[in-house]
Image (tube, rainbow, N blue to C red; front, top):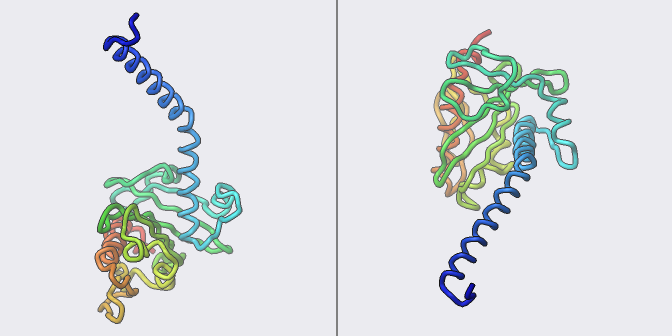
Length: 222
């Protein structure tokens, strides 16, 4: 075959594309179990972070199994549908994960949160004390919020003030407000938002309210 011909060039390029595509597909397939495991471990760390548990330098899965006792699934009426399986459950309109933990002999409930920020998805977890009302800890993260502004929701200075706040008033779910620094919120507990990151701050407020409402029957039940 004439190596200088157009036909040779096209055939050679086509063969190389097929080979490279095969190698990439094989590599991706081979690495998928490792990637999936890393995603699971990261999720465990996020849940533990809401419990104020530091996993740095530790086996995250072992620490997770030490603290998390159940990963239940609730239905749309906040009724327990299954005692296990919540960890594998993503964002859903019909089923909702609820984690039950034990920290220093006390029961904690961890609720997953999903929302939308200024530029993309935001998410997190809120851990509640056994009274199902007092916040024990939170974890928030984001996909693409503005560094130094909305992205600050993933930092301790923003998350720490949620601890000790209450999500209910007079037995009714009211959630927690996120307000501009110096402002207040009537009828509910509140924390300061991020200066210059108002939209993302409000998005966290909406995320808390919109997600907690799915657990209202569970939270208000004695």
